[in-house]
Amino acid sequence: MDSAFIDLLRRQLRVETTTEITADTSLRDLGMDSMRSIELLFGVEEAYDITLPDSDLNETTFATPGNLWRAVTAQLPQGSVAP
Image 1 (cartoon, rainbow, N blue to C red):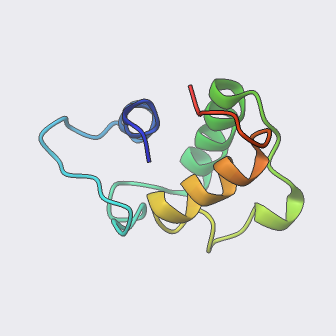
Image 2: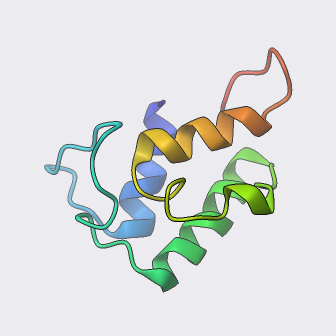
């Protein structure tokens, strides 16, 4: 995960900068609900200029930052670096 992704999570979920976010942090514990998951989806797709496939739009993908990051990076062009 890169710092821009963590910053995006903080903004979308309205998480304090003092709260540690790791790959295994529960997004629900950070305030994720159904409306915020949709906002986060749109934010991620816009920030990384990708579209997550329907198969990734599930509770597992949105359970932790690490899971979501893997879904994001899987959609980036080969060899590209996340912004």
